[in-house]
Length: 253
Length: 253
Image (tube, rainbow over all chains, first blue to last red; front, side, top):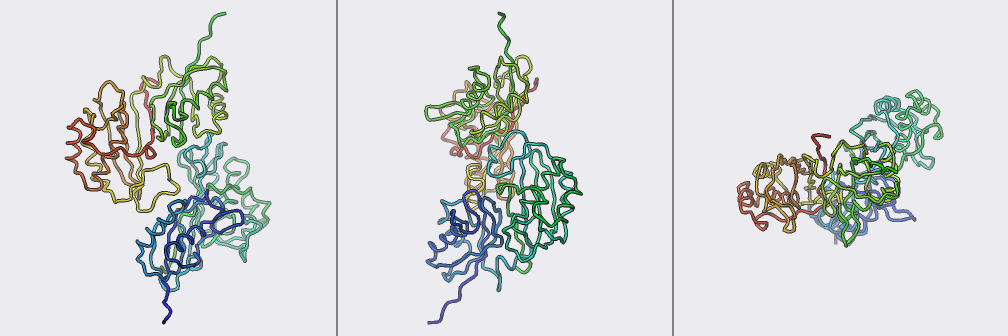
């Protein structure tokens, strides 16, 4: 018998991070990865790993996480998507699309850009319909000042001040391609694009930009925090529930 | 002792209808009205009724429900808003604003227009982040056809076909000022404006327009259903979780 060659599938996933301990399984509970791997096993009988573009933290949401999985079972993409969603029906994660990946595709290593959104609800009353979906900041924030402060972080920098102490990345040097802050009514949206991000980088940026929005910090203070290359020089870590992985780009896919 | 004159307060409320049996208290559970009245009592010691512009059904949400309440306790609007929100902190309802009402103001009887939004998530995978916030319709819907069908309902009509059998309104004749259907990505939004609506009118309209969106009905079928003046002639009642009371207008306030 010749061994079969598995098909590598590219999956786009949406999830509510609130029900999970993050992408990866932890001693403390269930990971998104585990939920998807169990659905794959229920569908195919194959015990295989699901690899994601970004290992989101506990409570962080995804509008379009990308993952790959290798399967021997012959299937078409729409059937795979619908069957996985059937087995995921009690979970807060769905497969938006499934397609056969190009030769050599790797969800994590082939990604050329990740995009994140951080949502702040900026009003006195707490959230109701958006509870668990936004960071509630009741003090008035100046979005234009936050945007000005954000521009100090765009470009190629040592982001040690914005990196979680337990971050495992080899280098704290990253290139932030874009960081924009806009207001839409009572909501402030921070959007960012980069090839890759450090652990907690977006949440530490959001926590720092809040200080600028409140007028406690100037854009120059953001530059000083960046230059200090020391985590305690920047603002506090914003909570995970405002953060969304929104897009992963693949240049050759 | 001269009896004090109470101040009539106009409250704008936002709520997640999923946690309530509707605006009004039911034997089956807790109403939004009850939650707000309990907060008023906790704040003021006054046992008073809160009257709303629209008595939303179980599971229906509000982005800006309007209510009024009479209070003897002297307060300013911002303090009233913040204090009510303090007592409502374990509930999925908040007071967005509180202001002293004009002479003769009545949240229900002074309202000159109500606006509703009905949200449909139109894609194969079920909702995750929007679960409980949208009606999930996996079959493809033609929003332009739905909009064309919707125009058959705009104007002054006998809406018996779109009225719940238990509706208590004196007359089934209403004027629907606007009914629009647009698509935004995988979401279809039905918006409507009228002086007042019949019980289940929006949900029965949404259930009927779905039939048009699926191609099972033509706009002429919508006219036939309207002309039949019989509930069973129109489509099924759409679920409450897609429906939002978005605005109440007062001409003299």
